[in-house]
Amino acid sequence: MELNAMYAKLGVSPAVYEFGEKVLKDLRERFDAIDQVAEYNQAKVLHAMQKNRVNATHFAATTGYGYDDEGRDNLERVYADVFHTEAALVRPQITCGTHALAVALSANLLPGDELLSPVGAPYDTLEEVIGIRPSKCSLKEYGVTYAQADLKADGTFDYDAIREKINERTKLITIQRSKGYATRPTFSVTQIGELIAFCKSIKPDVKIMVDNCYGEFVETIEPSDMGADMIVGSLIKNPGGGLAPIGGYICGTKECVERCAYRLSAPGLGQEVGANLGIMPSFYQGLFLSPTVVSGALKGAIFAANIYEKLGFACVPNATESRHDIIQAVTLGSREAMVAFCRGIQAAAPVDSYVTPEPWAMPGYDSDVIMAAGAFIQGSSIELSADGPIREPYAVYFQGGLTWYHAKLGILMSLQKLVEAGIVKLGE
Ligand SMILES: *Cc1c(COP(=O)(O)O)cnc(C)c1O
Image 1 (cartoon, rainbow, N blue to C red):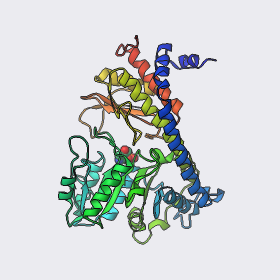
Image 2 (image 1 turned 180 degrees about the vertical axis):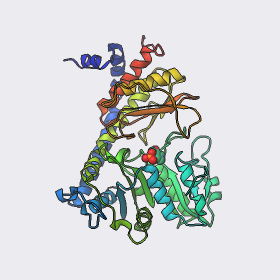
Image 3 (image 1 turned 90 degrees about the horizontal axis):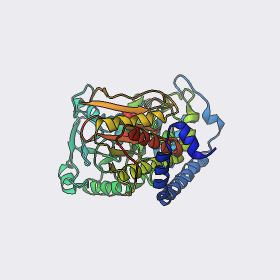
C-alpha cells in the first residue's frame, strides 16, 4: 500500500500530505544534525549504564522503607554520570517537575536568604512555590525573599540589573532554560553557561539551579556541564522517554543533592528511604530511549514551524533558528483556528483519538484554555500534546511526540482540520 493511501485512511487528504512532503524536502540537513545529537546522547547514556554495570537485579521491586534499594541507588549513579554531576536524586516520590523544583529550592534556602531569578518571571506554578502569588507553605511564608531581574527587550540578559540585584543575602539563583509558556527565547546551554559564570564572578559561593524542563538531550551538553550546582526536571517530560509513569530528578553537587534528599524524605533519613514499587524498568528504559524520543519531538517542532510559517503564521522559534527545547509556539490568530489545530492533534493520538477538545475554564487562567492530548501517561508532555489560552494572540503551544512519525501525523492532521474549517487554503 502506498504511504499517501495510508495517510488518507488516517484522515489526511492528498493535498495536505503533498504540502507536508514539499516542506520536508528542505529539512533533511536539519534532521541529520538532530540525529547526530541523538547519536551522541545515546552513547552518553549507554556509557553511564555500562559504567554502572546495570543488570537485571536493578529492575527488582522494593516496598516499605526501601532500605538498600540497589536499583534506585544505581539509577541515581547513572543519572549523575549522564549529567556529569557528583550526585543525583531520581525518584517516583518526586511527583512532578514543580515538586522537584520546590524540593530543590526549599532544601537550599533558609529564613533570611534571598532567591534571585535573573531571567524574568519563572514558570507559572513556581509563583506559588516562591510566594509571588500568596500561597500556603510558600518560600515567602518561611522568610525567604525573592528578587527578579527582567530580560532586556531583545530577550538577552540584563547584566547591569543582575549585578545590582545580587546582594549579601542572595543564596540561590534560579535559571529557567525553556521559555515554557512565555514569549521570550529559550536559552542555549552556552548562554546559560555565560550567565552562570557572570553570577559566580560577582558572588563565587552563590548556588545556581537550572530548571531544565523540556531541555534534556536537545543539545550534547547540559547546564550541569557549565557550572550549575543543580539541574532539575520532570520524568514525564524528556528524560523519562515516555515510559516513566511518574517522577522527577535533581542532579548536582553532593552538598545540594543531600539537602534535597533530607527535604524530600526527612532529616536523618535522606536518600536511604524510598521504595521503588517496581517501576525501575521504566525509569532505566525510559532514560535509554530518551535521546531518540527527544530527537523525534524536535523534528516535529521544526516540521510544524516550517509548515505554519509557510502558511503565514508567526512561529516561536521560527522555521530556521536553532533549538534549545522541544516547545513550538504557533500564533494562529483566532479562537476557531486554535480549536481546529487542537482537534487535529487529538485526532492523531493513539489514545482518546475520538475525543473532541473544547475550550474550557481552568483554575489559574483568566481565559478559557484548550488542550489536546491523547497520552499513555496522563499529562505526559513528552507525548504529543498542544494547548493554549483562548486570548490574544491566540497561540498554541505544541510539544512532544514519542516518535517522529507520530509528531508528523499530528501536524498534518492539525493542518487538515484548519483546511476543513476553511481557515487555510493550500492552492498555489
Ligand atoms: C513543565 C515545567 C515545569 C513544571 O513541571 P510539572 O511537571 O508540570 O509540574 C516547570 N518549569 C518548566 C520550564 C516546565 O516546562
